[in-house]
Image 1 (tube, rainbow, N blue to C red):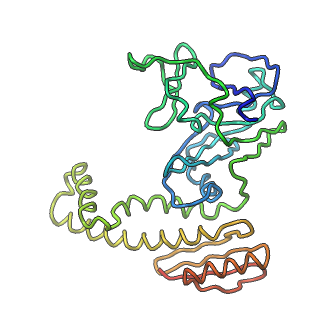
Image 2: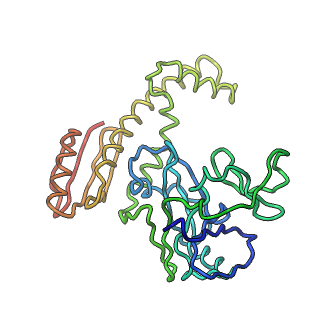
Image 3: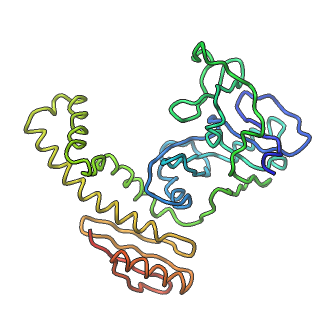
Length: 309
């Protein structure tokens, strides 16, 4: 059914349209902000919880929604303002009542095999695995834009648009708190510190340091190198332990289980989980024991988990 409905490519220079039937819409990057992160989470609803923190300070004022999907080993985060999108569509003759699904151009990355002409001066192109809008004048001589676009570009999943401008997302539907948001943002930053996992020995760690020395020659003295190397290894071990603990806690978030508190320090962590029923409580206890976490009842319908690093 999704491919039987007309798919309308929405961009800021589009002409006003007259519709005979409801449509699905695909918006260009002019209507959303995108980030990619290699986060160690398994499910989209887990990844979506950290989205607000990933975009902190990057978005214009207004209420934003978030969509999350995977591209190979990367999580793709999309922030968008549904109200602004619907207002723009209305100005072009497309009322929200006539819109079924909302898609993002990035979701159809593999379908954009050639530059997509938007108007005489702009084109939608793929750069470093990301769809962006560029001036046509920067296209190479062998790059010939196309204007062909149809419902074959329709992705598998999208956002359901409601006429009251209150969208529901069919990709993910999680309502849990953002409690892990700040933790996972810090956690993502640890990837740099943990770039060398010691599986390849000191060679990769030294390679990382050599890159720093090339960028900052003043760090090249032997005393400075020794100091940096020692700090690098110490931080790496500590942060890897935190990373594994957070990853384990994240695996315990599922339907009926809500993480309400998480405290992590150099020695250990404490997490509080609210559970919806006894079955969920039992499942959490089993998972915690497998990880050698200490489990206790904190209060009604709440479990306390503690572990050392």
